Amino acid sequence: MLKARGQEQPKRNIALSITDFKKLRQYCLNHQDKELNILVLLALETGARRGELLGLRKDDLFEFGINIRRSISPTDDDTQRKTKHSKRDISINKDVYVDLQTLAETKSTYLFDCNGFH
Image (cartoon, rainbow, N blue to C red; front, top):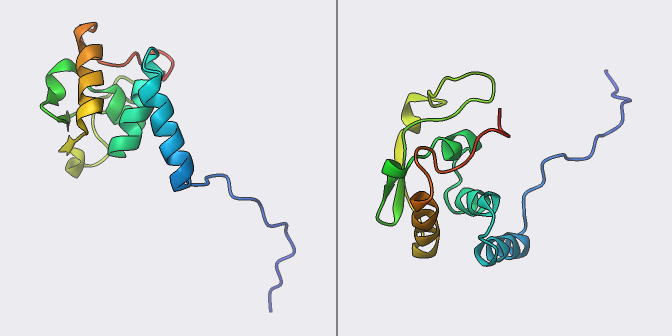
């Protein structure tokens, strides 16, 4: 006999449409001068978590794929993954792999700068 009288809140997390997904992917492919665009492109291609992508190192790259072995936390220096099954290998497209290889040549440890994440 309970009647809800509150206001229905609008959705905060709205998934991208296929059209918007393709536009964003194409933009990231065409504007690889910024590290963030490569990070977004990799997130679109793999579906990996932000901390997992920020934890990528040069040795985590293999031909047309990446190894997820660690995750960077925004609250502490722990590099544990969310679950024990999060350790995995993910295949990526050739164009994304080439971009990551180019980025890896300029880095010494982690592929992406995580200072803004902390």
